[in-house]
Image (cartoon, rainbow, N blue to C red):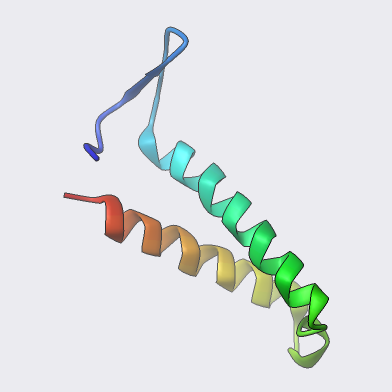
Length: 67
């Protein structure tokens, strides 16, 4: 995947914004799995944990898709 602007219905969008949305959706799926097994009760600060998971997912996606 090239990290150049993407034409989305006539509007040029930065690829990081699309990756951010995809990472958010992946994080939501991971949180649903974590809530099913009640894993968020075991962490000290659930909101900080969710943010850290989001950052990890987003940075992993960028590293995998960058040339």
